[in-house]
Image (tube, rainbow, N blue to C red; front, top):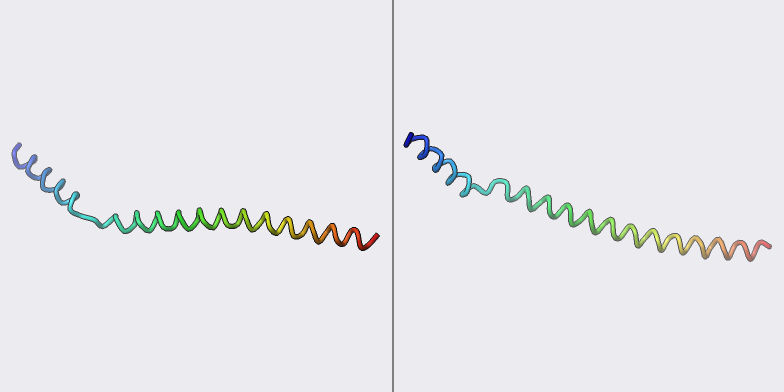
Length: 65
């Protein structure tokens, strides 16, 4: 029974000391932050474009008639 516990503790220590997955998590967080920023900026850009096209449409409507 003792070798099983020793083997478990050695594997647990190895898992604690390994940091291979840390880079993947950091990259995932960076990608999520970029996606959030892009989504927020697209929302603001869409509002600005909608306003600009509304003004153009209004100006064309008043000049045509």
